Image 1 (cartoon, rainbow, N blue to C red):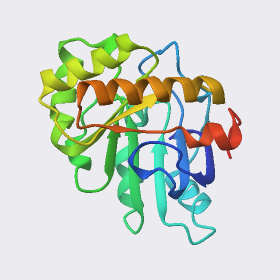
Image 2: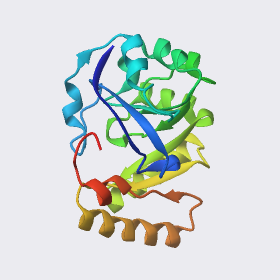
Image 3: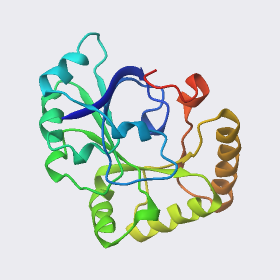
Length: 207
């Protein structure tokens, strides 16, 4: 399968924030978000499942985060996840592709992209609702309101995170303040996620 990078770090966002983990970043995506902070993931090299397993086996960390790009466009994703059966596997996806044969083998974090919604995407997200945490990237009040509206439409009522858009400390902080105020004003039962990796390492790769 095509891999962009593999590195050991600390998860900086979402429900696993602060957790040490191996990051396996697959290459390629089926969406093209203007705000994407990993556009470099369009490129990658072919790696065998055995080589990937070897790369994440040289220390005691048993947490694996498979991210992208979009991991589910990789044809060998099921084989990889099942080969990591002695680890705790987390998969980050945009939710456009539902993979029922992976349920029970990993924990899923779905980051919906409302700007790309159509009937097929809505159907996939609805299937993910009972199986995944939803994490929204919020850059404006419009993004915030669209995320709320989508969750209501999908009857998604828990395990929802709102995360600020940005790759600089000041914009992250400003948006987190706004998101926090909006959550309080709307009295929502949602979580606000930081982007701890930005505070620690900026927009550096592989750290």
